[in-house]
Length: 382
Image 1: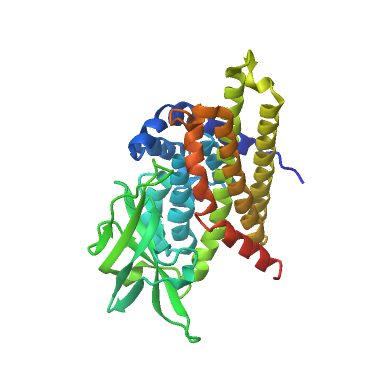
Image 2: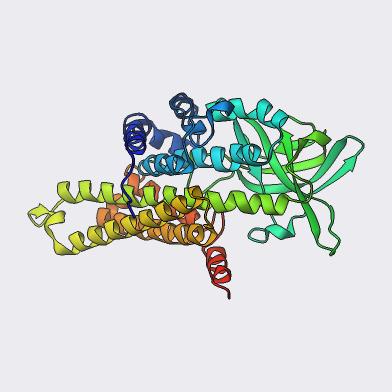
C-alpha cells in the first residue's frame, strides 16, 4: 500500500497550490465580504483545465481521474472554500451527471462548455421540505406530448444563478412504480427556460463568494429529450453522484482543516505573549499538533475512498467515513485555529474567521453527518 502521489498528481497539486496562494488569496476576502461571485478566478481555473480534470479528452476534458479533482479541491480549500465548492459542484454535481448518464447528443451539447469552465451547471435535488429525505421529492414532471411540464421548487442549489450558468438537472416525480413508490427521474432544464425562476441569492453564514439559490418551476416546459438517463432511475443516479461527491467534499474539508494548520503555524510564530512567540508554549504546540494529526488522518481516509472508487471496488462506506471524519475535523480545526488567534480570530480580516464560518456546512451539505452514520451502519449490515 503506497500513499505517495505520482509525479503527475504531485505536479497538479503544486500548480493548484501556487494558483491558490497567488491568484485566490489576494482577492477572495473582498469577494467574501461583498458576497460577489469570483468570475475572474473561475475563468483562470477554466484555463488551467480544472473543470475538465476527471473527464476524457474526447469530451474536452483533461484525461485525468477523480483523485486529481480531489487534490485540486484540497489545495483550493486551504485558501478558500467558496472557490473550492464552486469547482466541486461544477464538476461532481454539474457536469458529472451528464457525463455519466447523458446521451451522445446531450454530452455533445453541454460538456464542452462545462469542462472548459465557460459554463456552469447546478444539481437540483434538495427541496425546501425534504432535506435529507431525498425520497420525499415533491417536484413533479408530467409528459405532455413531446414535452415535460415541471412544477415544484428546489433549495440550496449551488452554481444555479450565475451569469454563466447554462442549466440545472432537476430530480422530479414522473410517475408511480408498480410497488406504489414514487418514480423519480432527472431532467435537464436550460437556464432562461420560461417558467424556471431563480430566486435572489441566500444570505449565508459562510461560502459567501459562492452562488446558491432557491429555484422554482411553474409549468416549466422542456423537450422530452431532456430526460437525463433512464426514466425512473433518477434515485439510483443521484445516489451514485452523491457517493462520488462525498469523496470530493472530504477532500475540500481536509483542505480547510490544513489551511487552519497553516494559518495557526504562521500566527504562532509571529504573535508575542509574555516576551516570546506563543508557539513556544506547550499549550499552543499541542493544539497545532492535534490539528495536524486530524488533517493527516482525514486525508488518508479520502485517499482510501478515492483509490477504491478508481479501482472499481465498492466505496460507499469508505466515502461516508471520509466525509464524516473530514467534516468533523474541519469544524474542530476551525474552532481551534480561531482560539489560537484569540481576539484576532474573531476579525474577518484573518482567514481563520472565514474558515470558521465555512466549516459548519461541511457537516450538512451532500449528506449530513447523521446520514453518513446511517450509510456506514447499513453497509455493516445493521
